[in-house]
Amino acid sequence: MAELVAFVLLLAVTAYACAGGADYGAGFWDLAAGGAARGRRPRRLIDHAMAPVWEVNNVWLVFVLVLMWTGFPVLFQTVFTAMWLPLALAALGMVVRGAGFALRKPARRLSRRRLYGAAFAGASLLTPFCLGVAVGGIASGRAAPGTEAAARVWAGPAPLAFGLFTVAGTALLGAVFLTADAGRFDAPDLVGYFRLRALVALGAVAVTACGVLLATRSDAPHVWQGLTRGAGLALAAASAASFAATGLLVLRDRAQWARFGAVAAVGAAVFAWGLAQRPYLIPTSLTVADAAGDPQTLAWLSLVSLVALLLIGPAVALLYRLDTRGTLEPLADSDLRGVRPHRGGPADGGG
Image 1: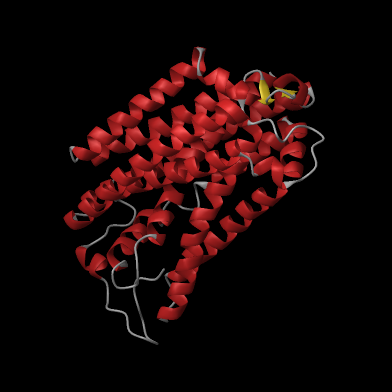
Image 2 (image 1 turned 90 degrees about the vertical axis):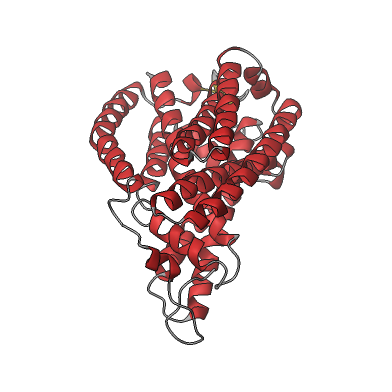
């Protein structure tokens, strides 16, 4: 039963990495869009693309936290005790990011739109980095049970490499999805704009993935061994193949299909990490069996998880389907052009 719950936990982490990753990636490109005038059109596209789904993506994060807290309380206590600082920064980033995104639209003064836009975009960079650092702290085994909070737990080579890789992965997802959105909204100049950024993100993912492998070999040997043999190696190879396919699809202007390639690349990478750690939740100090809660609790948790997936899964899938088809929030070219901002009055852009 503990293995089943651990597998469901890995599924939830993968769902959040893919859905939330595209969300954070859009915020990253909002940060990189430039000033109010130059970044007006990309930001309006980002606003329209994110608006229907940016809150629902957090469903997967709530699912992860509930599974950790209820199913593996020792893991929850260990991780949140040893790495409270990066996780607290990630939580703060989520709050600031949501507030910035929600408040930027109704703000009428350019100065306020810039302030809220900076909060949204900056937090979109901080949050995935901190979450990636926490994953690296787990993979390296630095956050072992009984470990007290200290910078050495999350500031080593593996945690920092995982943090940078996570940011690059979210940037890739965001750029690929926005390229498809630009084509769907008939904005050919933005197709080229985000295609270029998708290619840049592909390069960043390749570089940071090499960094993760180098850091893992020395700083997380158990995960390194898992990634170089068996199921971990197969999934790592699948991630690399999906990554290459994404690049080809982006180059051939097949952004709609490239979204599937990017999601497959990120999803396979998360599964490769999860399977490389077997049988540990924290290598080499906490196994799945040792971290599991009461058997009756796990049985009820499995049942509740199944019911939740049956109720939430189809609804979320329908929402994603409607959003990717542009049904929820149609965007006209006049929306992308926006209104020229002026000091002290209604304005578009931000950041």
